[in-house]
Image (cartoon, rainbow over all chains, first blue to last red; front, side, top):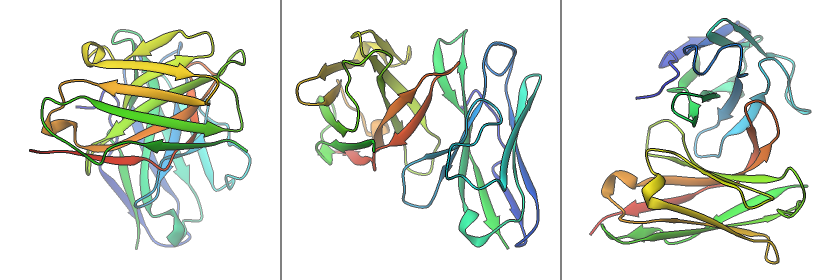
Length: 111
Length: 121
């Protein structure tokens, strides 16, 4: 059972915008801890997409953006492309569990 | 360029001890601020953090697995070793190591390609 809750799946047509939510609590996604997002392509290792709520590492397209509000965060993908089909995970830290925590994961399907 | 690579047995029997090695290049685990994390992912399930070792040999463990985990480093070989005792079929999955990035909280990039471990008699 993941501490951070994500929708199991989202889908969209090429070119559309999709968002993935990540819902936590005051002991993880809150004023004390930022949220990071990872993309995991089929059969591959995770790769960071967004760090510190809304920062993109070099090489990550600006179609990917992140936000955080209260105890929730969101990843938005605009101009959806076939290559975006993957699993996406949010990550933070939980002070009550003293544990790095991941979301339950969301599978993005391009219709 | 930072790279990491996990190695170890692909099959272990229940109750045995798993030993995994993370070999890395492009950074030194004796440099201030550096860290290496371990993670795992059961088939079709979410990622789970296991352990984190820092440049000063400080170590952190997932509290739910603390009693079974040990992480060590060999700075001369650029390697980090994770051992997990008393393996169970529920421990089957892909195991990854990753380079720690300093933030609040830490994030991890890049990751190794992962090694698949099956626990079965």
